[in-house]
Amino acid sequence: MEVEILVIGNEILIGKTQDTNSNWLAKRIAKYGHRLKRITAIEDDIEIISTTLQTILERKPNIIITTGGLGPTFDDMTLAGVAKSLNRELELNQHAYKSIEKAYEHAYKRGILKLEGMTKEREKMSYLPQGSIPLPNIRGTAPGVKLTEGDAIIFILPGVPSEMKAIFQNVVKPILKEKRGKFVEKGLFFMGIGESQIAPYVTKTENKYPQLWIKTHPRIGLSLEVELSITGFNLENGEELAEKALDEMKEVIVSLNGKIRERK
Image (cartoon, rainbow, N blue to C red; front, side):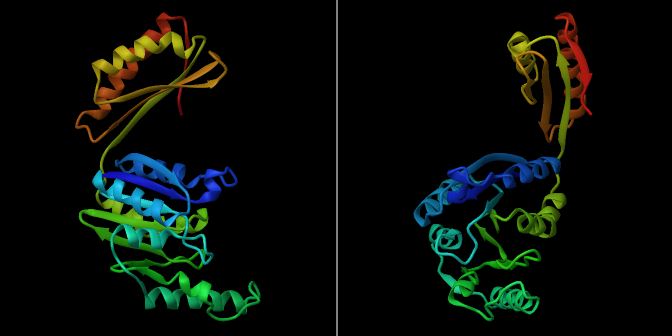
């Protein structure tokens, strides 16, 4: 399946908060053999959320995952932006309301919060786009959301990493596993030659194996250590192709007097 991630939050764009969510998600999406096509980061703005989601839907991914913007404050606009994009009304979802109410009640009784009961701001999180299925948030208060638009499944997840991860593991991961594809990854580290020196050989190998992604990543200095990675998605003979390409790159590295260290 093809997947896109939409990261929503002013704090990401001004550098106050580092987006670790998309990196965490990308690793797991690839692990189950699905292809992440884009990661897009935008600000908390209803119009921008709406138009960006419309653009993503036009590319027809199978799954869209959004993170951020589900909280009780005025600048948490994800649900309103998604509703506008899909031309759906926001409506009070009773299941979401009850789960939020229960979470705040539990926090109040434990002495975590001093304000008891549902406020306008807390209730705001229970207004979901029509057709939404609320997803339990065992690490926080704002529920995640699952909905469909055409052939696309949209998962709207919190931006707090612990909350996002919990909902992903419970809801999204089983779907990725059920529709699992094949992901092949091979690689090594080499020293003694720089990335620019091996670049023409990488290009030649890429042309020979167009089904594979062959990339180099300098890790320390200009030539102290470079990582070579070879990846492929859903190829019948992917393991064999990747192994052949890797063996050919090993020969090149040795011929250039480089030193190879296998990647663990």
